[in-house]
Length: 341
Image 1 (tube, rainbow, N blue to C red):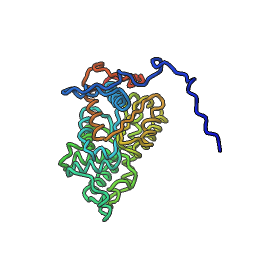
Image 2 (cartoon, rainbow, N blue to C red):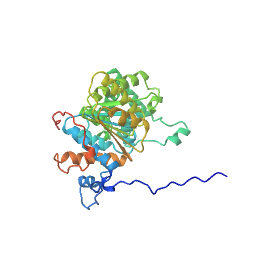
Image 3 (cartoon, helix red, strand yellow):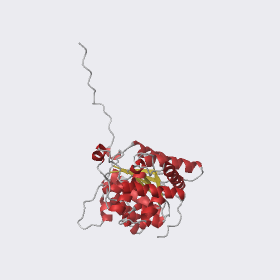
Image 4 (tube, rainbow, N blue to C red):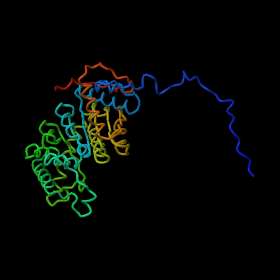
């Protein structure tokens, strides 16, 4: 029979003074209880200065700083943002000059156009797939494919082509359309598609050459925009694959051609941490001196909270209600004069 293992002797354990040990949490980091009637700005300042709450404030601070210094704010999102009712929030931000450019995937065009056209969108995929009717909405496909074909003929990108279609066409709810608002305001929208991923690609009116030409033109536009990100902010809301991959290539192209886009803030918002957004938005692009931030939660909560926090902070005078978090201090960048509103 083998001998039982020898128990460790703890009598000679070496201790350290608790007061001299480094600590990650201090009293000043704790939350403050909510006061009934407090403003949203006060509520945000009452959150604990730890983990997600600290990251939320850091994202707000970076966004406000970019606006005040006239730096580029690039707002990217997957179609889910539109499907959960957040288009009016984005339209409001566009109208306030809070966003300089948008990047999105092809499905975002589908849902934005359908909501503008008939006030509803998003079908039950499982049930429709059973009988082959999934994605077969005739009007949606016809209008998107025609708009994209016209865009290719006019040598404009897909974002501008679909935005023009909604803004200039007969759409009862165009006022809540992200694409129409961007087109009306002259804000660039780049749409990045993978052939076969969107429902209108299945229809006979789809033209692969037009899809490729307009989306590739948008890629070139995106690379130019990314080249101006120094000191700015890029957001990725809910795109797990397409936008992270496209953004990484656009950034590499911009840097290869000599554009300075190294010290910026990258913010990813999603329901969970995923590989491509983490690596291609948050970590790899910010290695030369930027900052990556991840905010986890439902878009229908995190995006309005982020936008409202930005608007409240922007309305305050610089220095008012200073942030408690030293971790949110940005790398120093040379700023241009604030953009005109």
